[in-house]
Image (cartoon, rainbow over all chains, first blue to last red; front, side, top):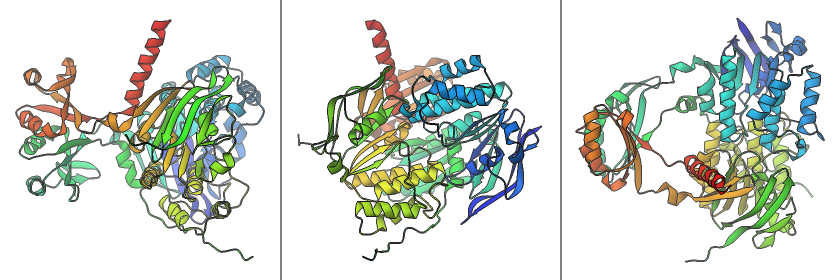
Length: 321
Length: 308
């Protein structure tokens, strides 16, 4: 069953900003990752799913209910963590938590204590005195304390330290096991890689790719950089090794992936099984250094991020006196 | 040794917020032209320290000096030389990014916007966007441009890459390296170890409001040698390799796997040897600031337990 549905969602803010014909669905019990560059439309899409904005065209649904008109009903069973956190002033963490609990008519103290302990948050402090990380933790606790079935998380770990990021990843995995449906937007690849079943990439307001995480995980591809002292050795090496054949980032046959004449550097792509052949070849050459370049999900995604747009700058006009 | 010019000097700085929060007896110096990193868990005191340096907070004890002036008393004079990116961004009530940059330029007495426009282009920022409607990443980019456009000698950056996508993070780090090359003095806090590792000369680890360690990155990277992890397919190969005189820093018998440290200039010898073995894989084990600090923290915690 589809818990979250986005059908042909369009919201045009002008100047090419907004989201355009975005469609995807998140199934029950699935963790769905949402990736894309800054300003690509991740938060805009999420805010539509939450029912905060009315779509220009298309629609979003949660539990089969159209978002904008049913946002109260939806919110009752959705834990939403916004990308930017604004807390009311003059409250302590405890007061904020109580306020949210009243608003949501929930009193799950067991869950609350569990979350406070997991994220090591001392809620007795005034929110004004909290660090950015503390505020995020408070928002996390408030969003999940009524143990909702659906979690919608907009860059949940930005601003968290690495230990808390790991705690958060563990928490997501735990929630996944408990059957929760999760939509997660993020820039942090290893968190997406570790948690998500499927991933959609959004760019300039349009979904450009959707795929299962398994497809690019567990690959045996390796990349090595070999540096030479002497140009002759470098040239000889390039003649010896064939060019690598790649198809959709998959290695068909090992060999030279790229070279750099200035640095006398050769990048080799190969699979684990080719390693002996490569070592055999390298042993015939005078090598300066040899380094492994890790191939990660990040490398795969980076190709979607690269762009070079000219938005124009600030025109300088001298003020007339 | 040549005398290094002290740009930021933090002496016995203490601010106790009670409940074991705050900063306690901090001491460190950032020298001219240096990039100094600041890393620590949430709430460990990074921002509090930075706010003292900026002169927003009066120290309870100790003091902060910037360019030989007192950070609290002379904050106005100091700010003429300092660019600052705050950890939490709040913009003035202006319509667009362009309006904000113009206001900022006036404040800074800038004669032209060339540098600002260059930054805007490299960060792929659309400055015509409504300031309030900007996404988090766009706001962060706007703050970066506003801070760097004045070409100040000292940069104080509180988690400047929060919310940036990976490509923009890369671009930002390039910008920082360029600023460093221009001779700027930079203090930067971050949650990302790799970020500090690639940009900083020294990195301080702050924990519960105290500086636990200051790592000299260049010395630690140990540029002349590397560690490699090698796994053998045949048990005999593994045993045979171990008898050779390589510097084995880790031995995992269960997997027929060794990690060796070898000088770069001896790398050819290693390959000569290895071509006679059947390898499952070979990979470099890179220096890692995170690992380094984790070990120090663990020692610290262990040490503390022993005392009690």
